[in-house]
Image (cartoon, rainbow, N blue to C red; front, side, top):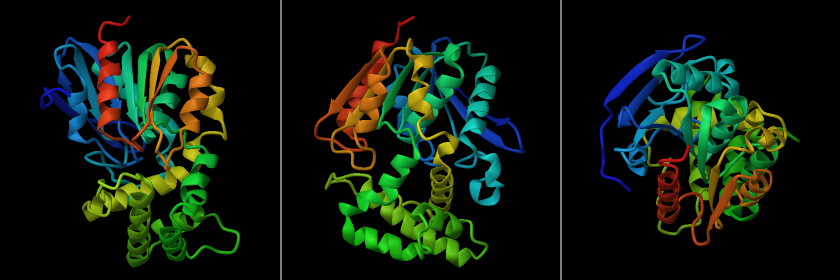
Length: 312
């Protein structure tokens, strides 16, 4: 990891449907462009992301995806129909054009890996390399696993998660939670958001040293995060059942590194394994004793990024 740095430029970029996205650039203005795509959806940028890049070699760009962080309007106050993966791809292209970037390296974490793959497949000529950590593709199969099947590993917490959803007979839990987090009654929304955040903190890691993340966050972050995650998961990231896997031929020529924890129960290794099998120019690095993130995974990511400093 490199020493902490501050941005040399920031801005608010108007995009479509009244959305304005916050962006920032740090490192070397003349360096190789790299775009960081944060997790969630709605997780926001952790300032430590800048430390993964050599500031002398890279121009490091990050932005708050529409509806969260400093971008406006927040998802809790916006029409969610305008917040889709396809809209985020347009936002990335608008930011690239605004900054005058011809081509950039993509890095993504968790949900950011889904968005990285979707953007790269839509605009393969704009991507030089890809480094992904805690790999997801947010398919309906993955959503079912994380909201239903993984409950077999956490039965006590899952029972509480189900009870808070009040699902109708035969209703998917993700659909029940969508009804609650978009409910007109603030007290109904608040109860669902609290239950959702508790479930996220339960399944995201088996690391006994990892403390609560979402349940320790401020209430606005919880509301935005839960609203966006439920919105995107309900709609399968606005992608087909296997759209990203089926589209890997579009980026087969782009060098990539997939970094995944073997103990990741939120996003089982199979997703990264399948992508690697369909991506001839990729490397898969499995961290045996970490889950959905961890210090060894971050170190591996820093190493992978450094390996692309002078590539192409």
